[in-house]
Length: 133
Image 1 (tube, rainbow, N blue to C red):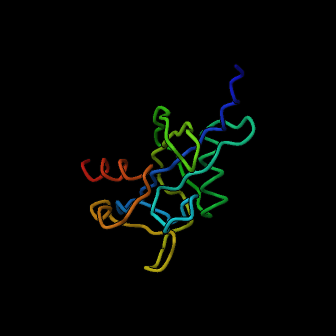
Image 2: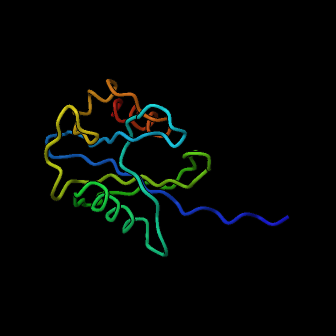
């Protein structure tokens, strides 16, 4: 039986500013459910390393430049209807995206307020973990 080619991995960022606010984004679920909050993420494309994909994703999708502080080992998650490899990176903000408003789909929130947001299934355990640290 032939195996299907694995999909390109995803990368996700936990971006923290110097004032200890963390960036979260709101996106419509791939099933069309209500928008949920998540940490910024995107796919690795071509032969790019995950670190390059993380920098490209934040630059293209959010207009911000990040410094990768540390990467985590990959984990397997359900995103949409596929099981994918996902790698989180802890990042610092270099430039861009300093402000967000209450109606924005991109929001900087103090870490202790993460429990006030409804996260998607992939991001929920990460948000809970961040609340414990």
